[in-house]
Amino acid sequence: MMRKIPVLEIFGPTIQGEGMVIGQKTMFVRTAGCDYSCSWCDSKFTWDGSEKESIQMMEPQEIVDKLWEMGGGRFKHVTISGGNPGLLSQLDGLVDLLHENQVKVALETQGSRWQEWFAKIDDLTISPKPPSSGMTTNFETLDFIIRSLKEKQQGDFSLKVVIFGKEDLQYAVNLHKRYTDVALFLQVGNDDLETEEQEKLVPYLLEKYERLVDLVMDHEVLNDVRVLPQLHTYLWGNKRGV
Ligand SMILES: C[S@@+](CC[C@H](N)C(=O)[O-])C[C@H]1O[C@@H](n2cnc3c(N)ncnc32)[C@H](O)[C@@H]1O
Ligand SMILES: Nc1nc2[nH]cc(C(=O)O)c2c(=O)[nH]1
Ligand code: SF4
Ligand SMILES: [Mg+2]
Image (cartoon, rainbow, N blue to C red; front, side):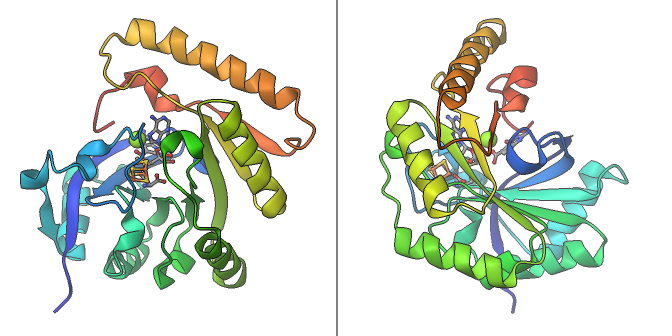
């Protein structure tokens, strides 16, 4: 019997608000559970136990049925995020099933675990965590993942680092030097995860975006990077399921 997938949210269609395919119309499947506990995680509910009761154990076909129920004929792209979907070997079946239905598949993961099914992902974002997260990168594992992707990956992949300050930027610089030929995206960190006052959040985050752009413009190593905001926060603030 196929192992079921722990799912916390299925939503969309919406736009991918981050990274390598920003703006892409997509559905989201958010899995439960993470091996990290980033201080600024905007999806803590996936791993802090607060929504344990809402986790649904689903077969790939049930997830596909739900996607079609919600998205109808209005999507061709599904993003799997979490939590860390990279913990779940059983996502292999979901990726295949989506491809059989002519749907492209993206993945958001932090690069702490490898799964063979990563090689089949169309748009794969690896987002290693900088010092502000409180997490430590295992570079042996990350080297293995990047090497495996270079050898096997059928789609595109990129690195994305969330930046909260100068130490994080230095981490991104070191990452860029280590993996020079992998596309690198720098993303503005959101440290106001609680506010519902979107009219205040947007100018606050825009200001942070400008500061990050300034820092990157002045940097001699960061000459081939893309600097992005989390676009969805500009539209919907800290709202969930968008
Ligand atoms: C919630 S995580 C889930 C996927 C995976 N665990 C990871 O971290 O890549 C999705 C993306 O949101 C980013 N993210 C989480 N909290 C954030 C915050 N407060 N500000 C900006 N980006 C954040 C993560 O770095 C990651 O790139
Ligand atoms: N619109 C939208 N774009 C996103 N990009 C990455 C997200 C995530 O939480 O993984 C996310 C999300 O939750 N919503
Ligand atoms: S790795 Fe991703 S989901 Fe896990 S705690 Fe960090 S930001 Fe949150
Ligand atoms: Mg998010």
